[in-house]
Image (cartoon, rainbow over all chains, first blue to last red; front, side, top):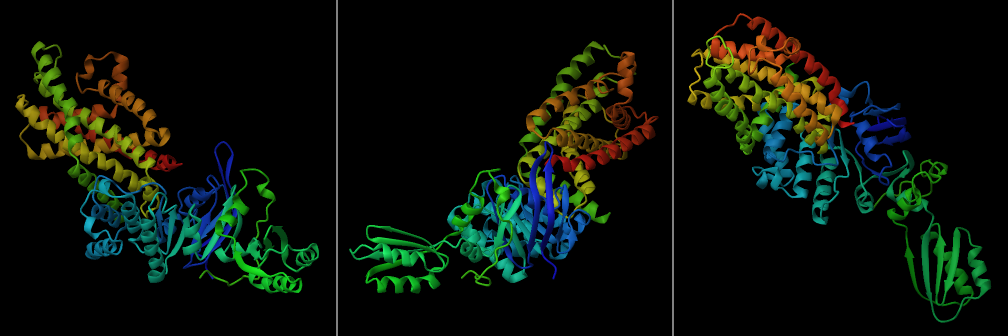
Length: 335
Length: 254
């Protein structure tokens, strides 16, 4: 199987010996929407710019659909689309003209050019403003135009560097609806970096977290959340206090990580709430403790991010595990 | 080759479309050459201080002023690239399937598009001041071609500077420091024979000298004796600049 992206030991050292990438191994399956998360300065943009052939890695290798980004850069550029973080359209011409110039640079056949451009404008909801100068566009319209430019050649993979930065919630949803539809309609692989955990959670098939130039973890959002083994079950109790003996029995249960009791609430941290709950209930019942209400809280992707990338640069990050998440939750994809 | 030509043409078209939407820069940039002709040209015509082989002084400097205008547009073209660097445009262009030679030549020749438009504004002003052009359309077109091509070379020089300096502030300083010596150490305003020996040597290595000579011969004097040399020097200059700029271009985004 050919991966859309495959890197091995990818390193980049900038002048002045700043190590932006410290050996990145990454596999992205064709047709996936892949989210790259990481704190500022973690190496997200550097990785993306190497993968899009803008500059060469110091060592290691990277392939896009089997093509080497260093030796076969020209071939790579024919199959990728790229939307940088900064605005990348000309603001002193209109939306149609932006697409026209890119269509000509990319060599779209002149017979179908106009049709392809208008189809793209239509599908991105920009048809009505196609004749207006881009300097009068809103942030969301500019981003959609940039995605339209990148999608003109129907790339096999689309790279987006923080695609929804600074957009309002409605524009963010609109952008993601389009990106998801490209995946479904054309099988386009989408590789994006973001600081919005909710987007990674909702739209990505797989997530990787990069920190201090290394991949610290990767997997589906569900796998990563599960990997924290930190689901919280909160029991609201009727007035009777819980005796030490019962607490001890709960602590002794398999897969229970911690038990904390306050006045009338009992907080139990477990690996997996669904499987741990019956056991805890049995103990409580046998101790004749009546429960008024049970709430379970699962970790969010924010918790995952803070756990893996929450520490400051250089504070022992290298010691963290760098393996993929294995586990019981395999195949448990997002809803 | 066909692909590269297509990219070059697309970039020239981009420049025309940008100009169509905002013409103010064309007019503001016309002020300086017009002042050179109207003030400097008419005054020095009156005092007959500079021997010009019987050609009226204002006629003599018209090609020089045109080339100064071209030089301005071309050398400051690097600013456009610095701006495109600050936005994501250059990154996106580098990721497009176009060779960097085509990208560099395309961007350079885009400045030629702007330069020709500046020249076309200077011509009616020169006619009003009584400058007599050689009424030969073929010569006229050839002169415009020279202006267009030399503009590409200077714009490529500007791309080299931009890719080394990278910021607007640093670029502005060097931009001015490039334009004025190139202009004054050439035959734009006075014949080379009048210069001190050291400056004559500089002028001989200044590609602007050859462009001025070619345009002056084609538009004003009809003296085409050195035209083949002029064309050869300009072609060599362009190829050299395009090659170096293509090599340095990628540095601009790093």
